[in-house]
Every structure is written in structure tokens, then in C-alpha cells.
Amino acid sequence: MTTKIKICGLSRPEEVDAAAQAGATHIGLMHYAPSKRHISLEQAAALARHAPLSLQTVLVMVNASAELTGKAIEIVRPHIIQFHGSETPEWLRLVKEKTGIGVWKALGVKTLEVMRQSDRYIGAADVLLFDAPAGDQHGGTGTSFDWGLLAQYDHKIPWGLAGGLDIANVADAIRQTGAPLVDVSSGVETVPGVKDMDKIAAFCQAVQQYDTARTDS
Ligand SMILES: O=C(O)c1ccccc1NCC(=O)[C@H](O)[C@H](O)COP(=O)(O)O
Image: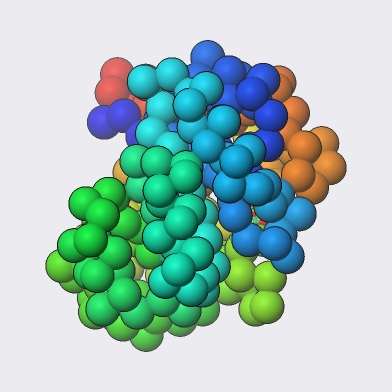
């Protein structure tokens, strides 16, 4: 099985190129003013246009108004929108119905109960992204959570793993959880908001080497 890889919080064309060359499948573009990775809708649109066809573009927003969400989708034209706040299944269904684009929901995981409650997104989210609980920051904190909660869960929606992943732990994270998609931001940065091209390459290589070893065994 080939693990999908999302590199999140990109802000420069050379970061997009590095993600594509390394074999990432998705790039995340943050439009959320309090984030250190926030970029304008115009910057996000330029990066989305720059991205080769091999990359799916994911616009990340947090509790945005209907007006801003509509405007953002119109300007950026992403393949997918990732909601990273307290957006409801009803809201996701509405966005899907109105725009037809892919809709992901991120959830901060503290307990198995959060995993169980994630079932309310059945028929609403195309993918659930399980991330570390991040309080007011919502995401991109570089911290991980108890992966055992994912391994114990009978997933009913396609899903991905985020939160504190890096070059050293990503293979183990996939082994422990069986994640079909991994998402990284802090783990491939020099400082918050600035991606490191070598780290992007090494992260993707760590995932690909794990996939190859798993196939061969
Ligand atoms: O990255 C941010 O600054 C951010 C802020 C608010 C909401 C979401 C945010 N990031 C979304 C992502 O998908 C991150 O990749 C994910 O939270 C994992 O981040 P990290 O632990 O830094 O790898």
C-alpha cells in the first residue's frame, strides 16, 4: 500500500516544487490569520496554480464564515477544503453540495470517545484527519497524541494521521496505526512557517522506504 503524504503550511513556490519532487500527494495552504503559516487568498491561489497535477491542493481554514469560505474556494480553487475548527457535519455537507470539492475534517484526539464521535461525520467528510488536541491554536503545534487510540478504532471514514510527525517517527507512526495518509507541518520546518526542502525530501523518503519494506516482507 502507498501511504499518501500531505505537507502542510507551504508559503513559497520552491516549497511546492520540493513537495512534488519528493513524491508528496497533497499540499496544505493555510488561510487562518492567527497561524504562523497564514497566507493570503491570492498567495494561496498562486501556489495552487503553480502546483503540478501530481499534487492535490488542500485549503485549510478554521471556523471561517460562509462568506469567507465561498470567497476562498472561488479564488484559490483548491481540490479539497480542510476544516480545522469546530465545523459541523451539516456545514461540511452544505459546502460539498454547493461546491462539489473534496471536504476534510480535522479532529483533535484526546480520548477514544472523540474517535467514536467522529462517526457523526459519516456522509459529510471525505477524510477525517486525526490530529493532536491543540486548544486555541487548533493545529500545527508539532505535538503528537496517543496513537494507540487510532489503532483500537474501527474506522468508518477514510482517514489520515497528523500531529508531531517528523522524519524520525513517521515510519513508526504508520506501523503502529496503519495510517493511509500522513500529514506534517512543524516536522519539516527550520522555523515555524518556513519549510526546509531537505526535511521535506527526507520525510517523504522515510514514508516511501517504510512502504517498500512493507511490500517486500
Ligand atoms: O499549521 C498551522 O499553523 C495550523 C493552525 C491552525 C489550524 C491548523 C493548522 N495546521 C493544519 C495542519 O494540517 C497541520 O499539518 C497539522 O495540524 C499538523 O501539524 P504539525 O503537528 O505541526 O505537524
